Amino acid sequence: MSSFFGNTGQRCLAGANLVMVGDDDAWVQKTLTKIQETAKRIKIGYGLEEGTQMGPLQAEHRKKRVVSYIENGINEGAELKLDGRKFNSSGYPEKCFIGPSIFENVNQDMTIVKEEIFGPVMSVLRASDLDQAIEMVNKSKYGNAASIFTNSGKNGRKFHYEVQCGNIGINIGTAAPMAFFPFSGMKDSFFGDLHGQGKDAIEFFTENKVVIQRWP
Image (cartoon, rainbow, N blue to C red; front, side, top):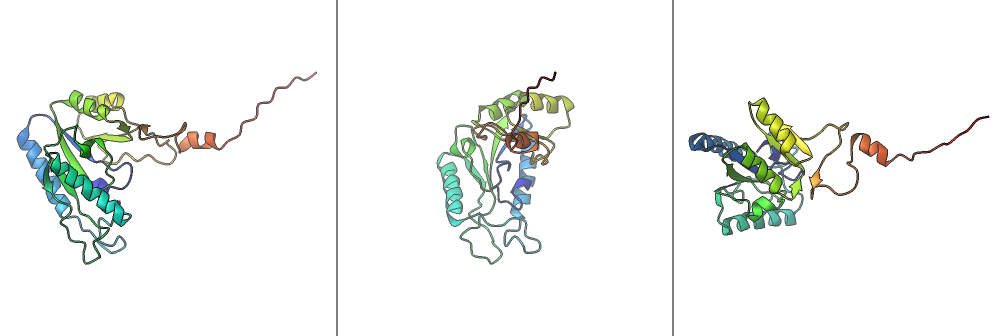
């Protein structure tokens, strides 16, 4: 949920789908309970006010869009464990505010997983092993960013090489590159011929001269 702080899930690198790997149900439920309790404590309000962790969506129609995705998830059978439509905006008008939402019992055929919501909505999926988790990531038509949290260097390396995303995070929730690295979206998360940072950006704005000379 840390990628929701400050930007309300509206940045392109904000994580939306959480894939829990393994068959240890007790560990999964313990982890999800911690995530849910943390999300409940997020202070929503005016972004420049001391202590505020999450501000409003960009416009009222953006909130309506996010709410429509939440309703769609419910209608498709996902279990809404935390309802962002019920929240405290610290006294500010609520027309652009919305709280964090968490869905469980989600599958990849659901709209909330397949499409980009650009709001504070998390969908929790289950995978039996890392291979299945990578397969789930690669099945998406989007390929902007993906992160793995692991103590295994082997698993981190496997994820790094096999996942089809342009920005990879290993034990980092938001895989945002520094300005001197290219912004490496893939698939439907990228438009154009060159990425917009680093050497690619310099090359894009550079006119090259070809000089052919012969001296006596």
